[in-house]
Length: 136
Image (spheres, rainbow, N blue to C red):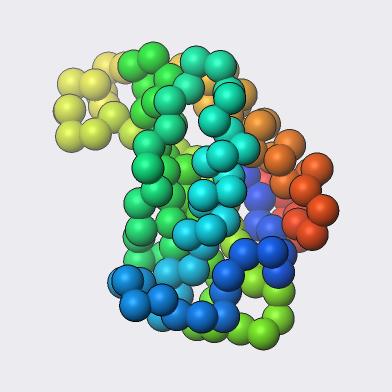
């Protein structure tokens, strides 16, 4: 299943100016944003969340619900540090891993995916300082 964008948000609440020594590249911002989101999702019934994972576009984490795994990605939108409020694309995708049979013959729990998507969206709607600039 292809990633589904949840929203593009603009916020100055999370680090987007200082390139850290452990970054893969100069655009790997979002570690604190992902940590905040993981903490906000922690009490979602039926879900287990992984530790944060750095990607070349930002940060992400796995959300496990029963037999389903969902990848939540927070992508920094930009070419490097910026003084303006940063923009972030946030998406979710169902992932079957490398199991070809599971990829071909299993259907994701779309209600679980929608529950997760709605909760993430709700966190953005209620957080002062986070502005949704593109609604998916």
